Image (cartoon, rainbow, N blue to C red; front, side, top):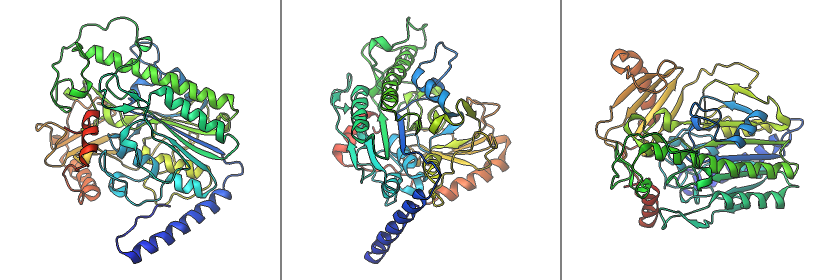
Length: 460
């Protein structure tokens, strides 16, 4: 159960009472849930990981053997979208089961609205809660963890003023949590930063061979500049788009290696078989589609909105299954609560569809870019994008409305808005109902936060 808080003291007192009742209800329902509910819940999020870089690839061997092995033991949801294409906003939806306009965090710097999220509900149900955070945008996202590691160990190779956790340290900290808590019921969230740019994997992880000659790009002085290499992504003397794509692929291979190490630590501790493990990403990455190179957060096209989603159920239930029904990241929190017999009726998400059940999912799905400048709705095979007036992160020529039929045009190359005015109107009404009260204006983070986010590539 998730509850918002109002402003006056009477409402705040009432909020506290409701939160207490929510926690007690969650604890009671979870304790009386399934006959053998999972005692260990693990959430792995990998920053900026595109769905098409997980598993078999046309370009060659898989980059993700560790995630592939997890998928063989679990269920792959092949049509999953993030509800926001920037890190903090997307993780907020993932951990609350709420769309951004409901939890109140629309960008990469704002505080989360007063909601009761997964960690509080699971703590109330007797779980030890832990989080390992690997980059600045997630710092302070959710309070109240029993174990929270937000320290960063390394300066990046290119942006030396910006510090992150390397995958090695992320894995070490997560493994230490397992060692200390392996006898407890626990919920552990492990966040890996690569393949977020700049793409600087160790040489050993780069795909073999030089890429074929490709378009040569200029470097921008800004972080959002269509047709150019963003300032925060620029590598010395590297101008070919194909080389950046090769380095992105190497970054995927690099992070997958350490995800594999963490999963092996679960196996060695005897925790893997009975754990419920979710692996996903917060958003994708533009690698040249629609004229944008090596960015995310400014658009809601498929290359930024689609994410991998793998769920490994206890005792390898439904192992190797694939689900084609459309799902979204707000579905993860209700799924974890349902696995324990708990309620999720005030969340926007639905529990993920049973792999043995219907392949159809009749609801619409929603996503937004940074500050909700661009919003999108998926309705079956149809998708409408709406640019809501003035924008900071995309180009002035971005169409106000675009309609695509994804089953016939997965690359979103043919805008059908002019030939489908009735459908556009219906879907825009839904978007207006959801985003009509959300202002179209960038947020104003504190100066020190703004500078760190600028280095990361999220603000100009």
